[in-house]
Structure formats: structure tokens, C-alpha cells
Length: 253
Image 1 (cartoon, rainbow, N blue to C red):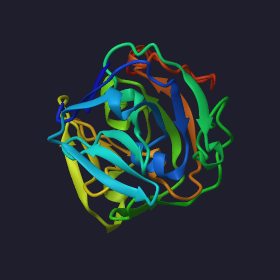
Image 2 (image 1 turned 135 degrees about the horizontal axis):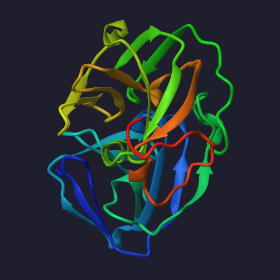
Image 3 (image 1 turned 90 degrees about the vertical axis):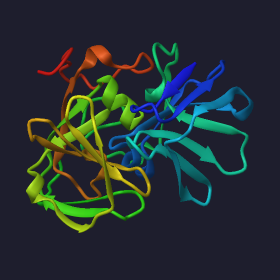
Image 4 (image 1 turned 180 degrees about the horizontal axis):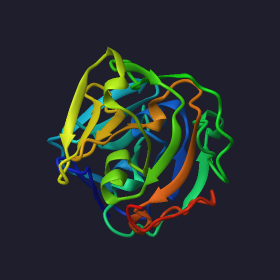
């Protein structure tokens, strides 16, 4: 089975059988993906990099490093130290996968705007939001609360986040940056996605019409947000099925 980042600068193949998908809600996975990360895995002898000109690695802990595309920011790989296996983003896979999500890990670290399974909780109280990438090279604050959060299942968002995205609208000039080390990827539709050039964390999206949204997973403190809907649901991956009971729209509502 073949997979890739969004811009095509990283392409890989994994020979079946592939491990079924595990969703991880740890802080690292949420910052890297902008929501939460879902991955399959294979032993190294069934994995091949076909193209790696865009591949960059970030050591996220003593136990593992994470691979991302330095050109488009796609979150792609998790490589545990000293193990002959590699995990790769399920959202990076091309076409039907035939896989299913079998487990949610570290749900206690999920963002307060959603639940790993079932309906989202009531919004928390929040006045000022503080966000950061995983490595800390990007830090910012903006007025809260987060408010309504939308999940997007389009192919672009799935390729870039590694699963599907969740973001909230904000005024771009309301972000007060304390540190900034950014790369931007110009999407085919004329938008721009901002990500950390050092660790690959997804940070924001600027639409072609000027609309601006921040990735919900990068907020560090209580958000005052709540997931409210799913858009471009017709493009969702075949390996998951949300059970939160929220409205689903085939395209943009």
C-alpha cells in the first residue's frame, strides 16, 4: 500500500498485513497533528521510502522521533527507538485502506473540546488561550474562548494532519507571538498552512479569501471550545467512524 505527504515530496510503501489503526491523544500527537493522531504500523522489512527529499525528523523524546515533510508540514511517521517497526499516519495512505480503528490511547490527555469516544463535553471556561508547537519554537496567545470547533475530513486535511483536522476561527492579528519559527505551505486552492519548521507541528490555516483558523490541538490551557460538526465527510478515511453524534456534511456547509 502506498502513502504520501500532501505535496508528494515524501512517498512510502508498506506491504500488508498492516496493523489496524491506533488513535493517540497524548499531548505530543495532538500538537504534531493539530487534533489527534492515528497510525498503522509495519516491521521495517515491509516498509520502503520511495521518495524522501522532503523528509525531516524531530526527536520528540528519548524514546522516539517523528518524521514530517519539511515542504508541506504533513505529519507522517513515528519511529520508536531500538525497535524494528515504524508507525505511519493512516491519513497519509492513498485510497481505501481496509483498516479499522481498534483502540484509543491516552484519552486522559485529550483536548477539552472533544471526547476520544462519544459526544464532546460541555465547554470549559477560558479567557486567554496559550498555544505552542511541540518543540516550543512557536508560542503565542490570543483571546478566548475557543468557541466552536469544526472537524474537516477533506483529503488535504487528512494528508497534512495524518488523520483529520480540527480548528477554530480567529482573527489573525489577534495572535500575540512570543516566539516564531514558521514555514508556510501554499495549497493548490490558494490557502496557506503554517507549521513549525523545526518539529513539524500544525499551527494554522489561512484561506484564499483571508479567513484564518488555528489548529485546536496546539492550545495548552483550558479552551472554552467544543467540537460542533464534521465537514467534507464524503472524503473521510475508511478506517474510522466518528461516534460523537454531531452533524455531518458531505462538503462545506
